[in-house]
Image (tube, rainbow, N blue to C red; front, top):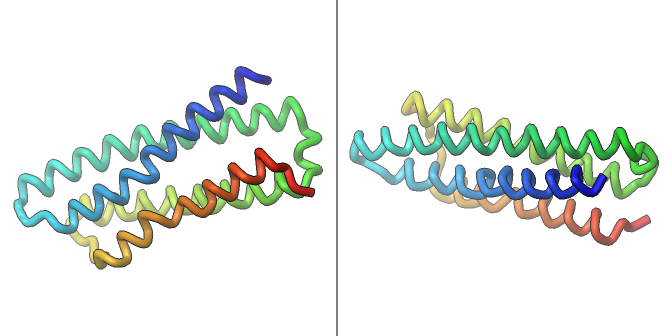
Length: 138
């Protein structure tokens, strides 16, 4: 179980590196005017999204593995809340993919303000999940 937990944490870090950096790339991409620079951002975004997706898949996989070994956690309200936050993060990940496609096709129409807010949003479920796991409130 400790190996699963350690690997789960490692891949959470990988996933969140992408979750926090990919929207920042979108901000830089939207500011770029040179077509060569925009093409470079497209490559960077695609590669980062691939790594981010692997992080997400392994995060969820190791998390589910721990739940299979300790199904009692599913009866705890804090785990339900944590899983709801993970579902929100998966939704955020999916939105990042939609944006990746829009930028790849040069049809992204996001304002700088929207992108900057979007970039900060995952901090809320991350903090919530960490607090729930560490504090395990009733």
